[in-house]
Length: 182
Image (tube, rainbow, N blue to C red; front, side):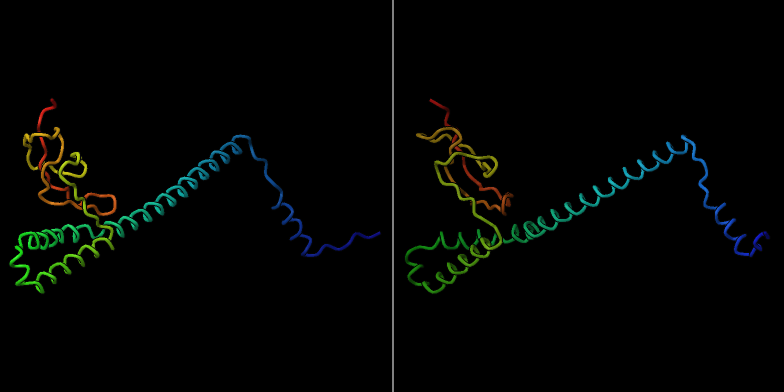
């Protein structure tokens, strides 16, 4: 019986079979590959955590910008409120009758300003005489001993304060009793 004749495809098949044989991998190489895999997995997990933290930080920054971005403008508008309030406080009854339309316009302007403040999360901090002094909300402008009050009681309000959401824009300016406890 005659042997089959060799073709050029037989050589290619033999070469391909030789190339696909898996070389022996030593245990040291396996350990090195596992260490590299673990390092890459660790780096990947850290990168995922960094991306998630960046997303959360950007979201928090965006919310803060929405809530508190106008705080400088709001702080600059507080003297407008103060001046309108003072203008209405000093008007006498005689002047009120003579300038009713003008005063009504000032009152409407003040009311509209308060509506705009409320729309943007700005609230008044308006303590009254007799309330307890809170250093988180009030600024003591003076202390005075006043009979029938306790130390730390508010005895006079000189200017109301304002909060922007949960942040203090301006503390209420107050006088505080320094009467010692009896």
